[in-house]
Length: 294
Length: 247
Image: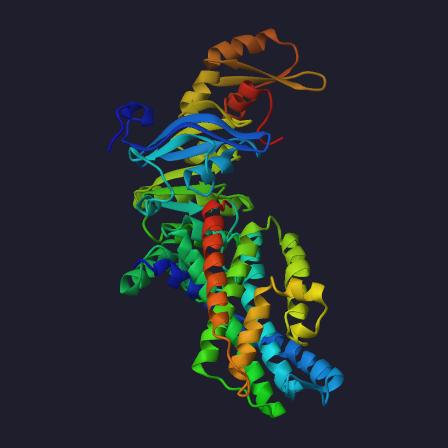
């Protein structure tokens, strides 16, 4: 089923629809009545600082946590974790590499396949192709505990793709990776989105990751969604250019719609000033008064 | 197809067990050997209990206690996979009913519990004690192992951290080991201890397994019904608890 307002899913059929999703832990409001939609085939980033509510949201979207209020719909149908068919639509890459360290790469995939009801030659072929896709064929019989951090991450992703989900959730997929491995992971994620024709929903607190990867970005802070759109839309809403004005012990920012306006203001200032293009970090700073990664 | 989750979980657990089989075998062999030396050849040497030699009384008790420990030890493994390695999330995310998780883990607990049975069977041969491994014994053993595997599963589901598990072990498992007729007949203990022992399932399974293993003893068939009842109650409890489990 396709939702009526396809335009709010970035011009695509609606894959995920979230309305009023709320979750408390004791007195702490972890996610506060959030609404959003994700279009089919989108690469969608949920951006926010640590503790903003990103993981709690993913956990509710995948049935690991029960929402206190609100609902989730997949392809128009209400998500009920007790209805097993919908779980086959979803692949999940958690923040931690939750692999069985004693088992080999292939055995980790085998168990996942069996849990999803796969068996026989079909499963073996799928294990082979997922390992190949993740460049892990040579590590097939290596215990997962002996793989490098980047390989473990790829194996977790390959595992999540094994049952050919239509939606892949990735919680902080590049956390703990060095900059080189992170960039390789971005290319891998783009490949998943394009070649596996998978809707990708990822959470991140890395601004550059959201900018580099996402078709659309949703910014969350203190349990609430504070902005959303394509990276370009978000930057445009703040102003395409920013002046970093260096005062005595602080840096002030001023935003401008275009470069001439920024240059005009620059000429009026008698302190050190830098002109540059706006980033999503600036958008976050403008909306919340703080940086994502302090 | 409906049991694919049970099979997958059992496969995962037994693959890991195979990787650490030697360690598990050694751990299962050492503790009963020490108890056998200390109680069988030390404290109880030459004594008679209920008309049989103390060793013939002790060995079935050790078998029951050690197999209980192994079956219950899945609690620690589930705990580690839940709180530390987070592998348990894989089960919660998979398209399977949660009762399949209970049965898969229980089958694994039963498998683990069989390891000390084999070891103590060998000890009994070495000690020259005649234990009667009959189908009736196997049925009693199966009930016993399923009960303690389920108890381990429930414990793993209700604790909030790894340290909570140690508390359960200290207040439930250790007293059960010593007060349920493993080393001494429950009837010889003070009334208060007997009352405590009567709430422990190990008391009933020890009594039943000892009777099925000892050629001279008479089997109280009502104990099968007692253990069966405990098993059903624990399964229903586990089903209720696991339905509410979040990560």
